[in-house]
Image (tube, rainbow, N blue to C red):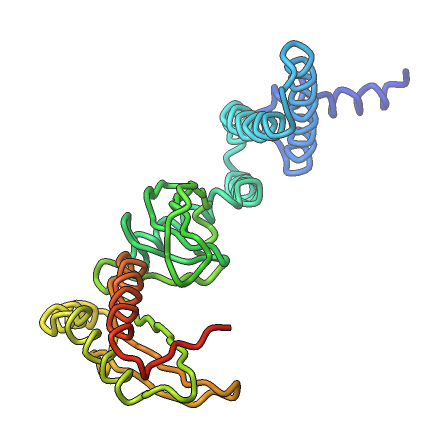
Length: 297
């Protein structure tokens, strides 16, 4: 081996580079590549040994194991390599920049989850007990963590709003990437519409009067409750709810029948109960009159 080649080898030898505390940028970059290759090699060997000693029972466990392993190795070697890299203080800003960029890229979902958590806890977020809809999935919030939140799923049938008793976990970054809808305790009532179809020869004036009476006697929310909730919501939003009393809309349908649309405010969790109450009252009242005929398909 020639003298110049020997000197070149000694200069690029990782052990020789580690001994120097005042390295130039090219030397530090070469040392960093050595350490990166060693870390990747150690990670690959470790994962192979773990899989041979204790194989994962399924693909999900294998994925989670590898994900935790990558993060663990990143933190472990990062802590070990910090003193070595920082031994050349003149390169501290460059190293910090490279390390910061690597951490941000490798832990992108973690940072997004943290941002999502701050958004959830902010004034425009939600809390446990609220009902939200996100990514076409609706449910009640039962837990909010630093990295994920959990919903108790609600059936997709908009008429009933009933729980399926299934838990759905969402990473917090979904709040950043998707729009979501909230029914909070501050404003926990929604407009609902109950439709009744009558035959064309029915006495629709009498039927309309009966339906209006049912709404006013059974389903009217106390005005002071509505006003209090609107006043609370108005602290953060400019809300004008308008007419809050129930109303019955009557229309002639193209199919040759009459539609009575009962529109009323109802607490979100009482939606199905109120529909049952309306149905029973309508069936009972209409049965007393022989000139009102419910249209059936």
